[in-house]
Length: 290
Image (cartoon, rainbow, N blue to C red):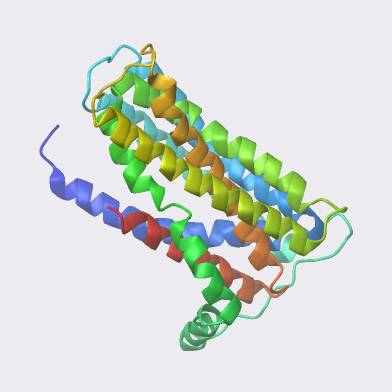
């Protein structure tokens, strides 16, 4: 709007650097702090929190843009509200206790490893990255948010402004639901560890294949016939439901991936490395399609 492209690019780059540090930290907290038998529940709570934030943003987005039935971008005031909320949210980080002060329900403490030199940490990260079990999981990490670029372009082209604002409110609910259901499976005491992971893996596999087939059918049957659809259109659901299901699928994967690596070790530094690997490969899978 004000021809300040340099600020947008700088902000995007700075956000990427700072977000990487935040993502590694938040993942480590929710993997390390809970007791093993409660990790599914806490990972679910983490995913619910990650989706309630976008849902709140979606409600604001919808409230500001509910009357914009044309295509194009949202009202610029939307970004001002989001920027203010994010600045206020920075202070919440200071409420998080350090690992040394955490005590679980059973009275056990979080195992805290002593700090290591930077070069030793880099070598340890490489060893973790090249473990056979991690290498086998890398494709799953990579494709967990691979859909994001495609769906961003798909939503922009297919729906009008207020329909996309509606989507930003409703789609995160798919992540909330899937995280809750995944926690029921992962914390079940009646199922073996292998059974839990195998079941959720096949849920991910079949739903992922089904969703891409759905989008291919939409593409070839309708041949880009529809654009800037409003939520009142009779074919809105056919075009929109895949977006919710992608959220459902990706956050099922999130719960499964973090739960899986949490069983690889009980040592804080090592678990932090595993979480960092997940986050970095996820980010790579997200930006490559763009």
